[in-house]
Length: 410
Image 1: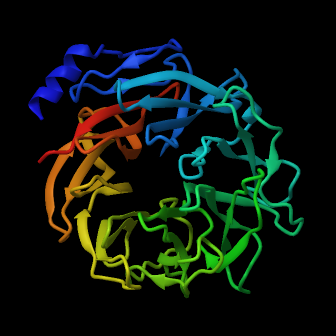
Image 2: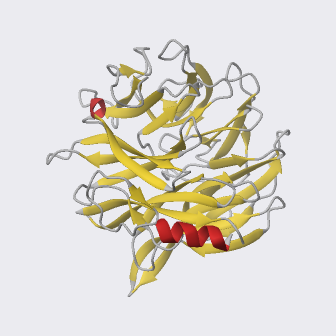
């Protein structure tokens, strides 16, 4: 392990303040790296893997002086430990940038790429109305199709808070919150759809109604192809707790929704923070933020094959916005931790490693002390390393996308 760190550090180049569209090698596990253009305001970071298992970081970049955004992404080559050139999806210009409802890219098994993003509907009388769009590329991002709406049903006035993941059949699945009500109750509804080998989407499935309107949804595909979906639901009397559902037939049908934990958080509004799921061969872990029964980020661990809601474990009472992966030996849980620097609040990126029994093995600070850092996302590079990315936001005029390599040994 030490030899690997030395090799990477020797070949790596420190790249702080990079504002060019060039390939950048990583400086081992020592320093965070700016991977966005330092002259552009960037936010709403997302991480996925391409069809060859390489991490791909996507974010919203301010493209004009008027504040319009476009989706850009950058592939990390896991063999050379190198960030490749930034690629821009010009068709997305004018899209919405949102930390909880961020634009995303997804890679089919055959290498086709889909960009999924949202545009505000400024002509609608509905508050916060907008529509999800997508565009496709079959030539590694060199060219893109004309954009299309995800939802063609005219009764859907708005869609948002979506997630994308590759399914067991090699296609892409998407979940989102929709204004159409599957139940005659308060809130939105959660829907699912998947791509077709011939392009576009093949037909949506309504899963459950009465969902919280403004928290990100989570779609996780396990090693055996099972689809796990988690979201914040409105239970009753403004109780907004996390709910889990799953599909064993690639999204054709879903199990009834079941609460992940009976937090009983009563809140007359939306907290803008969603759940995260990670699975291995036998276990399903979920983490989320709540203020029900105690404030903080909580973690549960249960059998992947069972529809259970195990007891929750408090990770940290000052934690926010968790994101999690299974790294082959432990669950890696990244989150923001609120701290003080000279009396001023700031958020620091922290990662906790949790074993299969729910015991915390180690917790590390990732971003520097005093530097306001938020919305971490992470992916596995290989058995030894993770890639973690986040937004560094020190003032209203400077917001950058950061990345760092994390060794997984404890």
